[in-house]
Amino acid sequence: MSAGVRPGTVATTVGRVIYTELPTVVVTSLLFAVASLPVVSLGAALLALVETWTVVVTRRDSGAPPSERGRARLFVAAFRRHLVAGLPYSLLLSAVAGLTVLYYVVGLAQESALFLLATLTGLYAVVVAAVWCLRAASFRVRADPPLGVRQAVGRAGGTFVDHPSFSVLVAAGVGAVLLAATTVRVAIVLVLPGVLAVVEIVAFEELAGDGAAAVRSTYRRDR
Image 1 (cartoon, rainbow, N blue to C red):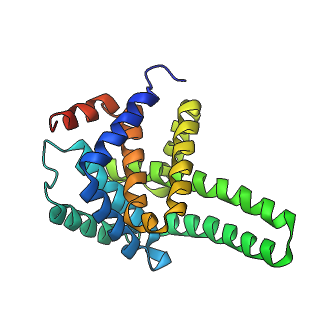
Image 2: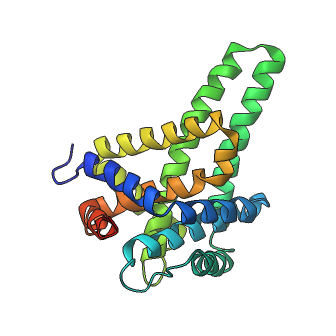
């Protein structure tokens, strides 16, 4: 594990943020679900989700909208702003997910072990693509001016190379959240996108921001 990176602190901070901001988790998750219904806008919805949660978590004491209505407005404005920039993210995520579903359908129809194995590989690819796109989104929305797709994706990959053990733990956590959500289908719409965004924002703060402990300290004041 890289020096200075504390997975336990990240995990407890994620839990604290989700517990405190549960209404915002639900609101942003529903907005994400609606905004990504046209698959072409999935990337814009992802960027808007990450930008909204970046503001909520990192600017809690310095300008983040305090109400769910204000945060919803923040999401909608970010979504409109990222409609074009989000297209490559839409293409990547929809391609990986679409191929995985195709392998699954063909594997069941033909009772093919090969296609079912490909489905399992595809599920891993879905997790990797989701984690990578979330991290690239973090780099894009925090930069001024915003980074292009190639730069954001490259920097995201750099964090995985620099912190491989922590990155594996984050990916495993994202996979666990995705698996848990599939057992309670309504959770996919109600909380999954918001929870994944919180995981990314806190993890990014631990790697490249003030640290997860600093985030947690702002939420301790509510106790």
